[in-house]
Image 1 (tube, rainbow, N blue to C red):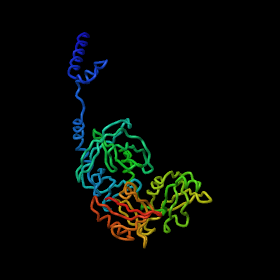
Image 2: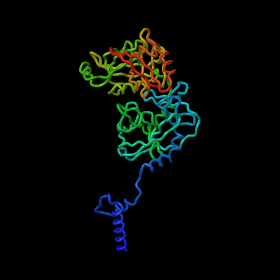
Image 3: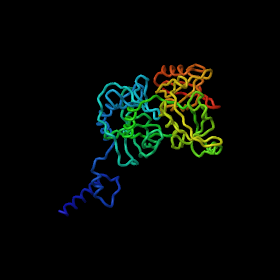
Length: 394
């Protein structure tokens, strides 16, 4: 029996060397013989695997009223980063830009969250892209996913290598149909919000309530030069105070906010993430470093109406307040929004928009609403002593 096996293996090896002469010979022929006769996996197999999972993904992902991809979470609702018209908005997270919107009726898809054993492993994922109103599935190769933290999310994200072709707002799946997560902007790159973290955030959004609040504080980065001048090691610098806001008469520009409710403010993003989730009536305790002292200050957030009738459009991602003879002041910029991608910042003054000098907040919002999908709103912006023109693409 043993002699028969040895003879058979030797014969297979000889035949393989004749058939595959371009392949180098190996010192241990048995595994190579078997490999040479095994079909080689190729892109046809990948395409077939994607075709097999297509019905589940198409049932889960479709276009939202705002034109972006939306993932169905109920028979009549979906989650998206492109919320669209205000009358379709059910709930939103002002820190991340995530929105729950009304959606056309449909059956709930049977999605399974992906829980990989290894993250930093090369693999193909499947992106659900939109082509008009249709969903097109596309394989995306990534050299690995890497754990990363973000002040905007309450759990760990998976950072994506820069070479990976995934755009923010894209829902991503595995080649066997498991739901991997949502691609979002993360620092200077992108990351996946894992499916479990996304579902937890959605659950919290559906339970939250309260009217958005406003502190009336504009901030900027604490640079090394400002850190030396103020004596602060961490925090953000107050650049402006809304005279009708909660901080008026209590804080002044040039002071440094080092912590909120006992948590250090390490970057401007940590500040924005904290105040974006503030509701009217919430009281925050700020540790503030001034020219001569370090003190704690308590501020109670005001409703935006108390500051001066702000206007808001969730797809644009701006809260604006009209300033006579100047234009509009940017009170806040929603992360992941069109305005955020155009690099508008809290405290900016829009002095020209849609052919109007010193436009009102209502005029800016009407101009944005009238834009067709793919259009751009050109605005003139003043930031401190700098002036620039910015295109906000719809």
